[in-house]
Image (tube, rainbow, N blue to C red; front, side, top):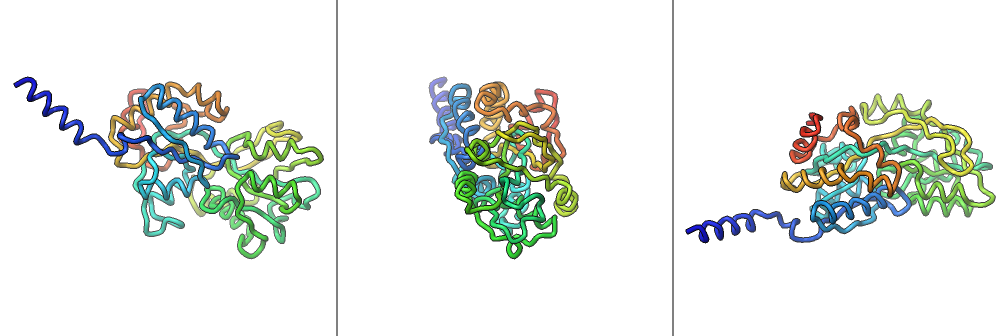
Length: 318
């Protein structure tokens, strides 16, 4: 009888086991020139060593694509900005009529929107972008969403007032070196590899443009408290001598809402407890902290497994 019960129990566990637990998880990140991609690699190693989860890391255009893929069951874990995630879970803007069933695991770090140019471009403010060749980021990236909103908030029409390109940060850096681009937007951690590469190019001196004063208030009025002020510290990039005011949005780690509670719990537990391993990959991971889980910009509902873990740490997320 005991053997029969044990066999029946084992069968129930096997039947209820989620399909995605029987194959490697897909972690969707961002472009190879950004911060999401290396952090995704660090996360995959943590999950394998400390949670018994195998995962494949995929480079993508960024947040918007990641949300689309979570919604289509083409990914299990994704990095995203809260603005793109907010649009996705509420079926807004690019996701109109296509709500994505995703839930947050944790708030990671603030993503800073860089407006990058070089000496001699004639760009000294956001309004100087008028008539210039400007990349607003790769298609379906969070950079594209935020760049469009930043320019609109400053009174520019991105479709009419600039010669718009849709390039990844690495492509934008190459285009700037070849003098085929006057400025580009990229939202990412500090430092962002592609911007560091541009700044380290012999004969080029980068300029980071302060657009905070022209855009932030109107961005907040239109979208709510998703966007926050931040400063890019001096010396963040080669040749960048002064601190530059900018605008940031918080990044979060998400999963599909159908992920079992225990699996989501173990992902959060392993990631938080081994976060020093992520700091070794990129310093922005030092912002994975209890205090930020209650950040007002974290507007995406948390997964029940994450709620359980954070409650054990004394943080009541929703």
